[in-house]
Amino acid sequence: MKEIKFNCRTFLNHRDQVVVRVRWNKKRSEVGFSIGLHADPSKWNADSQRPVRGSTHVIGQKRIPSRVINDRIDEFLAAINESFVEFGLKDVMPGPDELRELVNEKVGRVEDLEEEPQVKPLKEIFDDFLASGKKERDWTSAVHYKYEQVWKHLTQCDPTVSLETLDKDKMLELKDWYVKNNYKNRTITKQFRFLKSFLRWMKANGYPVHESAIDCQIHLTVTKKNVTFLTFKELMQFYHYKFAPEHKYLDKARDMFCFMAFTSLRYSDLAQLKRANITSRGIELYTKKTSTPITIPIIDYAREIMDKYSTFQSSDGSLFPVPSSQKLNDYIKIAAEQAGIDREVVNTYFIGTKRYDEVHKFYEIIGCHDGRRTFVCCSLAFGIPPAVVMSCTGHKDYQSMKPYIEVGNDTQKLELGKWNGKDTKVDIITALEDLDADKLELVYDFVKSIAS
Image 1: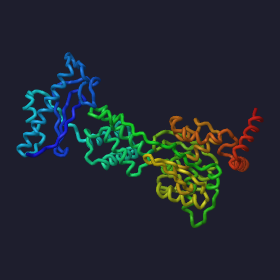
Image 2: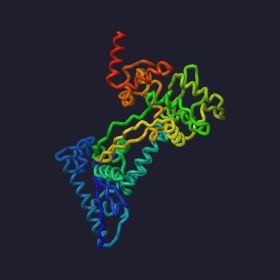
Image 3: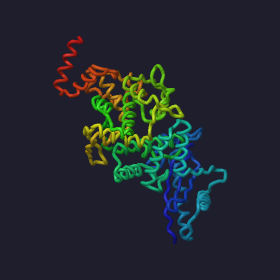
Image 4: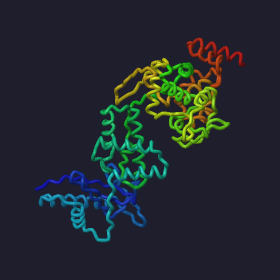
């Protein structure tokens, strides 16, 4: 006798039909049976895979007691079990059509009873999800890539994962896989947000999703995001540093970083910046990441960099000779090291329950996006209102600005200069940064007294 291992699951499909799905042959074969009855989703227990005990299901003009539905489910489960026993006695591994035929015969299914169509494999459903995101929500290639990473991680955790097995236990197994492979808790939490958005999409589109997977909480300690940026003093130190003539590539990398710090541009916007984007109002463009229209006034430091590259010519009208993001990040690190941007930065994070504290010199971790952060943090520190800063950066809400606002609050009280300040104002700001907390408080009290 051949023992055939199989498993069954009962659920409601997108038309609220009660379906019994059976999988066997190492989950390679699958058949779904509609039992011929409907149920009220609000009276269905997904965990027990049964209608709520004692409930009555009103479908159209019909009133169906839960016991009737349970009896029909039991009938199908018994027929499935008997069918596998018979195939086992014959030492035969059945195919989907063979099992369907025998089970239907045992339950006395009439020919006109609607058969439950086969649900797509999970990978095909995921591909449909990606296609809908691109078509309906205008996903960029970057967003598309993030979701592809979610699928990659899920299948690395379990190559045989399916719609049926993607439940709470699988979610917890995935969390353990991330921890085992040294993913930081912040990354794990972000990946689970992406995965759950896929699960919610499936549910909205009628697929039988485990509610336990959607409701699963992973409870990981996530530290506050460390906002890295240059202080105004460091930015000026970097901006005025003189590189050796043979290191022109470092001089250019520094200029590109500082231009981003003076304008809030992302690398993607800097790379596509054209002379046509420069108007009497400043820099006018649609951001590449969010397609948000922004206008950024050009401060004196940024204009000095533009003047420096005024003779640069390109076939597409680009304003600057911008290298690839990878090269620019590499060159900025080297340039920052030479310029003495060596303040120590502590990065604290968790992997699972284990805490890690990493100490880096700033030049080791600096990158293109620190330019944009520097613009935001320095602007807020100068007392420029968040709403004005947001109009330059394209941030749409205060929640996204919150990490920067918290950093800027430490020095925001002293509005002694704006971006265009030179000489005296620079000296004032530099001197203020060198004061300790007690002396800063005295200065603040003095300025407050004369202002009133």
